Length: 114
Figure 1: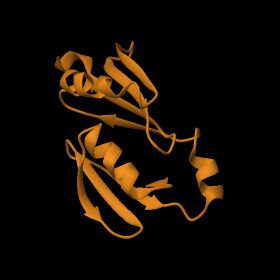
Figure 2: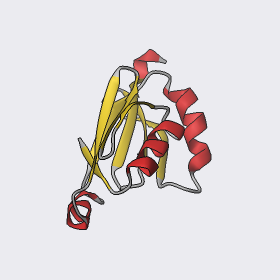
Figure 3: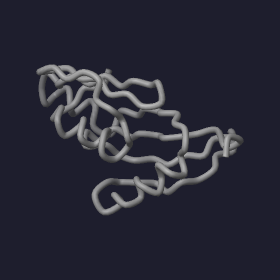
Figure 4: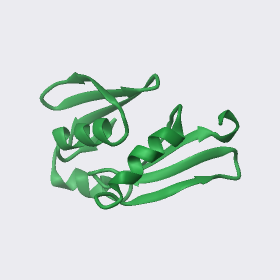
């Protein structure tokens, strides 16, 4: 569960940039899904909570079709902090992107599935 400053902005990012589908939206809690994986978001209780999150939270998401997703995501380079697609020594192809809450999102797919 990730604490977020602005739930709507966060959902829009995960939906429009990373291809997640919102599956539940409530006043202070939401869930998005992609490739069978879900991320839960909760409205941060205070700015103090967000100070702990910003720059200190990382998540890893495994996806299918990372090359097609990358072609879409790289069009957002002017809006978000992004590390280009690359192969890792541990057998994953990844890119990294910072979300609106300064959470670092690692997006990867097994290199052998290409």
